[in-house]
Image (cartoon, rainbow, N blue to C red; front, side):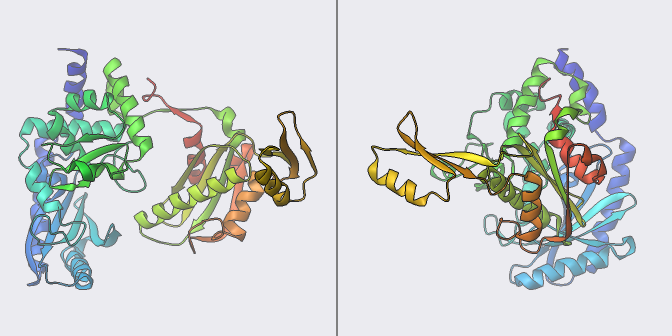
Length: 447
């Protein structure tokens, strides 16, 4: 056996469920499905399993059950959402059900220690989608064609994604989903096939199981990798994967092929450079209660706006991150070249031979401290900076004029607390976690 084969044989023991575990999850699934069927009104045409349980790709010790209720297509969208909630709550009433949100609400509960989701979708023909979940039953049918060996290869890939922090299509992670794992194994045949293929990934490469896609449509997709949904060739699964996660995963694949190890199947270890804490600025705040996808989307867009405002003011932002407990607490973190800037800055204009441009530059100059023609015959000015403290600027953006700075409307509640350098130890654990993300090197990426 090769080094990779030895590692994968050991890793399989972490991935493949035991017989007793399979028996337990099957019993829970059957119990929940029957409860959903008993609670379903005439508008529901079918109740069926979905997700990794239905496809036989769930991981050992990490199982959940998706039960889909297929609702007749004539039901309105408003009725559709309410029906899904009502049926889910009725079926799971013994297990303290609660609402979760994706593109539409669904019901979640823990039954005998196993997470269960009851999700509505429309009972439509392939390609005539009315809701985001309508493809799911077709995904299940497609992936049920995988034989046992390939299902186990999917399990290996999922475990690899999870251990390296690149798993999950939700906005908080923007990584590789379970379905993408299945598509990749369907295309490349095995875990090793996927790793070798992605280690040589090309910018904008198209990955399609059967190479059945519209080449003109593909050119419009804007993602680091294009992964065609075999159930819907007009859909790019790569859209949900961030450039950072694609790049990180490519590097991890190369590291694994160079030095295969079980470390790639266990939680990734980070090495923090504590010297850089002096360059880290963290703003912690509370936010309104919203669905996880909504708050993560608002936080990431707001972080991008705040970063842009810092850069426009002259600060160099090396990295930035955001974090939330998905309840009420969140934080932004920035790794800066410097926390403070000089009081004055140089602005250079056009050379004097561009008469019109030179004249416009002089007229637009805002109270320059001094103006001159330099050795390159360009007009230069020294002006006072409006902002010299990153801490004060961030606090002002988030607290005094959030909407003007591109911060999501009505997202932040209460006061903003800003910490930097040694003060970081006063911040909440959540904020310190955001700071640590900025000053770490993920060892397996650069193994």
